[in-house]
Image 1 (cartoon, one colour):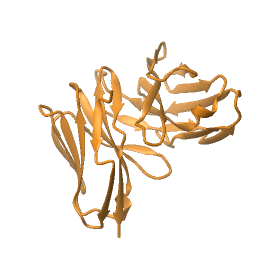
Image 2 (cartoon, chains in turn red, green):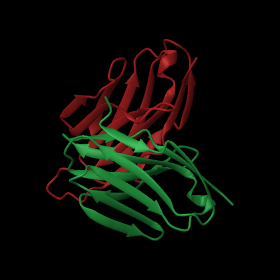
Image 3 (tube, chains in turn orange, yellow):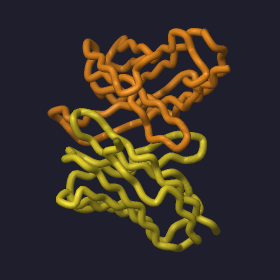
Image 4 (cartoon, chains in turn brown, green):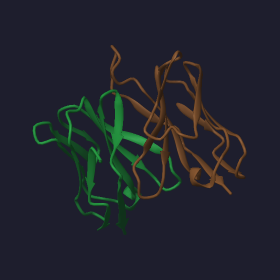
Length: 116
Length: 107
């Protein structure tokens, strides 16, 4: 099994629909992130979480929400999808900054979302 | 503003050539990662550096903390090295990413 699993891998939906992207990890990392990738742009941070009770907005959080259901699970929701949310979404985990820092950074395979 | 700048944006090389990709950052960092993204999207971490130099096979990564600069070198490049290479600087409890270097190695 992959260290970081995202579902679904591909999704086509219509404007106004609610979409949830799910992420689960087996690394035991406390830190989880959701990023968006658009052609020609670097990865942009949507939300991040440093533990189950900690949720923080990133640079492009408008139109998105997240839930950290457990240490291993971090889901991203688009409450009412719009076409400019069409992008490749990545979940990532890291242990950077913890007392047992090994500098690991792991990404999921990505979820390609198309909003028509 | 972009705290992390990469160059070049695109790079085409002949198989066997020595390749260098550069990354500059504007703030003090805790660590810098080099990432590889193959067509199809998946991203893997190649290196994490906080100082000096690391080597894995044909890949070498270096970092100069004083100059705020890192390089990724690929020796004896091969078509399977064709991918997008991304540097990611870690500071302020977040990662900041360059826009990537798209490498194509021609047989």
